[in-house]
Length: 313
Image (tube, rainbow, N blue to C red; front, side, top):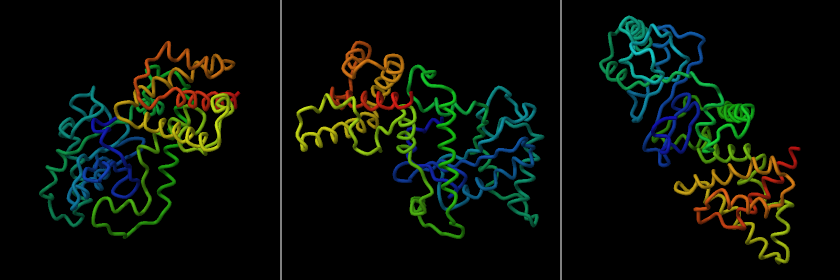
């Protein structure tokens, strides 16, 4: 949901912080500390800022410092309507408790207030977790009709991503040293935005659109009738590559989502339609503007989804 979301391509888990986003070449980092306490008094907020502070004074430069937290007591805030805000939105009374605890964690021997503390606090963004689980998944789904799939499915996708994140923490990297931010990739504690998008599409369609084996879905057999082995191999490869290009192309992916948004409910309601009937219905409702979405590619996508829907029933 961050304004820079289009730049973020990699998410590292428990390397720099709970989660740290990075652009493709790791020249820009978004640092996130997450706290899931039932309540967050000022002292707990101060403790929660420690890792962000350590990253602030480190040799690595971070673009954002984000504390992701439960909804704070409204009495702590100046503008109580905000759920994303800077340190300046916190009342002076609570600031005192936050800073006292943070200073104590930074300098337990009472060495005084660290010089960069005020600068650090001015860079903090507080983000309150005040949304349903499904909202986070809906925010990355480009369907116009967000109710196209059930709340349960959105929640299961969220849980799967969360479980993937948790699994990445299993490796031991304590006391490891890196020279450049991108060096963390060698520890394999990261997930790419591309993988999240693939997981999302696969769960929404009920099949593996991109990363599955190159099997032929039965509804597609009528399209490949008469092709020799070489022609068949080329066509399947073209279909898979075209789907990937259409989905991951920044300018054309919206058209891919519109196509997907039509096919899924149409097949759920008209499962007996053959793939050509679905294709004709699609053309009458959605304008195909993406070069990669050829007729054969769309028929292949319809065949995959039709096969997935049939297996669910």
